[in-house]
Length: 438
View 1 (tube, rainbow, N blue to C red):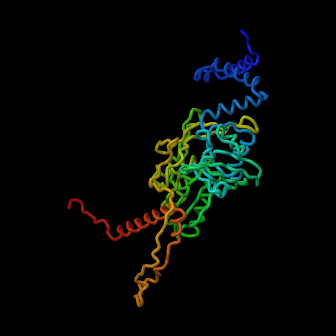
View 2 (cartoon, rainbow, N blue to C red):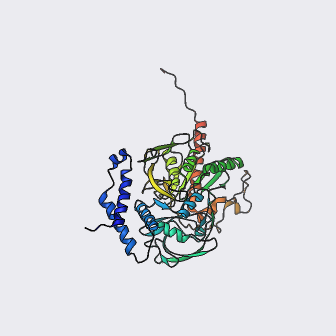
View 3 (tube, rainbow, N blue to C red):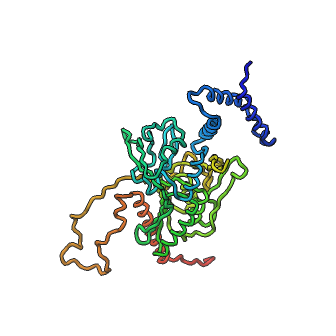
């Protein structure tokens, strides 16, 4: 029987790895399968000697590592020098590219969410769009890392994307100019007097502190009657940041807990004891682009009955990835745990269901410009309260531009109206005292 020196050498090396494992690990997991190791060595040698182009051994082994990780789940991957550097910079809020959070599905790149203010968002790309081609190169058959590498490039350079959109009969093309993506993690404003709005585009290392600062700015400007926390199209980010954000609206308790196989994977994350928002009525907006850390926040506030979750079901990424450096320039991103909401719900592949389901829609209003009211009649009596009937809500434009945000504002107003009526009723109708034994 002929033997192959390379196969024997690889087999011996891989077997040595198995033999080098601690005894306890070997007992629990059993020794590495020798037949499969020999098969790997044989396949390696066949590619090395017979592939149409010569490929060096180190490149082949790197391909083997990539394939081993991408075969696990969509979020585990081998990070090359560039990918590892991009991951490190993206958590601080600045990186170069098109501004897309993507995933691989059925061999194609699927858009989870475009990042606010990015070339992708400005071009109108949406959650759920499928990228079919990058330039003239079909995406089918690529790994996610290969597709991401093609989407990278010098600032100012252009790339044409062929995109399929669910519900559209034909794909369309769009040309994007690469740019430096500076993600403004948090921004805030007032929708109407007393009703604040905080948008979180991505969870970065300092997002918790930024949201707290936004709360303080809003409260300093005027008294808050209600608040909308917008997590739509937020692809997630740093786990610790999601715990910090949820904790700003809770008075202690569990935000999220994780379970995995590693000894340090079973961890519970708790909120601080003080509600920085002072219990203000809260609506959280989510949609299919809300993933990972966004779902942690929405799930925690929902389980603790602290907020009304509104919108459409979230993405359903309930797994934790740990970045394990294997050198100064390379790392492995490995799924090591699943996370659960305080009530024990796993979000993985299911997502967060909103309390109030509101789809994004185009709403057309009907004008009442021709209708005559009492105030239009000649000689009408004054109402005596000093208010003009012609005053209009500043939020009237929201109905046609963002119906989900409009519905959130309407619900907040309703909560405040009910609160005022409840307080008035309690004042007007004191509880009668009862004498014991009467």
